[in-house]
Length: 46
Image 1: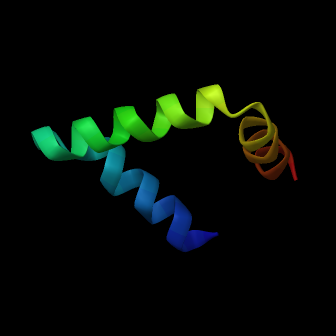
Image 2 (image 1 turned 180 degrees about the horizontal axis):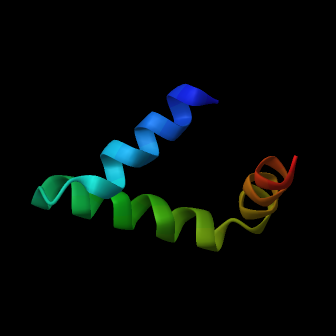
């Protein structure tokens, strides 16, 4: 879990254009996959 949080910190903290593009692709992918979005929400509350 700590590694995932470090990944979020680096991914969202980077202004590099490639990081921005990858971040947007990943967020859009999770938004379209309802099962994956629910999984992330369950992980966040537990």
